[in-house]
Image 1 (cartoon, helix red, strand yellow):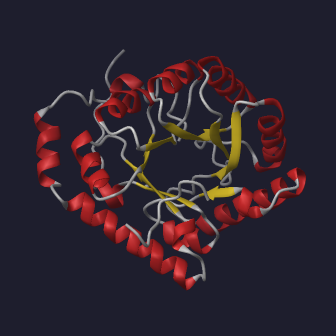
Image 2 (cartoon, one colour; image 1 turned 135 degrees about the vertical axis):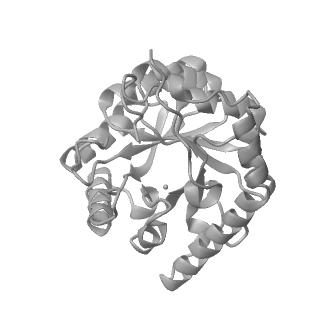
Image 3 (cartoon, one colour; image 1 turned 90 degrees about the horizontal axis):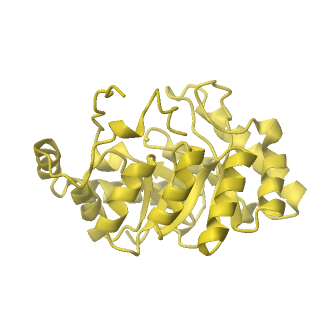
Length: 281
C-alpha cells in the first residue's frame, strides 16, 4: 500500500448548506480563547493517544495474522485547532483527514507540506475547485459517491495540471437515508465510470460509514467486503488493489479484523468535539 502509516513505527458528505453550513465551521486561523484553552488542556495528550491507537492497531493486526504496516491510520482532525494537529505531526504522523472544505483550506497552509491530507466528508459540487486548488498536498478524496462529483474532480484535476487524484468510492452499506454513498448495487458501475472515464482520477478502493450505534457494524463491513469482491471481479484486479476504508473510533479494531486497510480515528486521538451552534444565514 502506498504511503500507508505504519502502526509498528509510530470516529459524511457534509449535510446540505442549510443543514450543516460551512459558515458554522470556526475560523481556525483565529486564536480564540476557547481554542487556546482546549489546546492547553490537551498538551501532550493527543500524541499519547495516537501512540495508544497505533499500538491497538498493531495488536489487532497481529491477532489477525496481518501486517500492521498494511493498515493506514487517518487522524481525523475536524473542528480541532492546528496546535493539536501539530502535536500529532510532531509525534511522527503524516496522514490526516478533514470533513469540511473551508476548514481544510484554512489549516493546510499552516502545517508542513509533507502532510497527506485526505478529504473524508461530503463534497459538494461548488467546493471541488476550492479544495483542489487550495490544498496542493491533497492525497485523496474518500467520498466519491456519484458520477457528477467524479466528473468534476476529474475535470478540475486535469485543468490545474496536478497528478492523478486518488479516490475511494463511498458505499452506503447500512441503507440509512441519512448516509451518503452509492447503493451497493450501483457500486461496480460507478467504479467502472471512474476507471474508464476519469483519466485524472486513480481509483484506489471503497469506503463506508457504519451505523452510529454500531449494532449492524459487522454487516456493514461485510457488505463493503462483498462490494470489493464484485469490483475486483469486474475490473480483473486483486483484492490488494482495492482498499477498504472502514472503521472509526468506536469500531476500528473490528474493522481491521474484517479486512480494513484504512481506519479513520478522530475523537480517540483528539478528544471529543464541541460543535458550534448553527449560525443563521
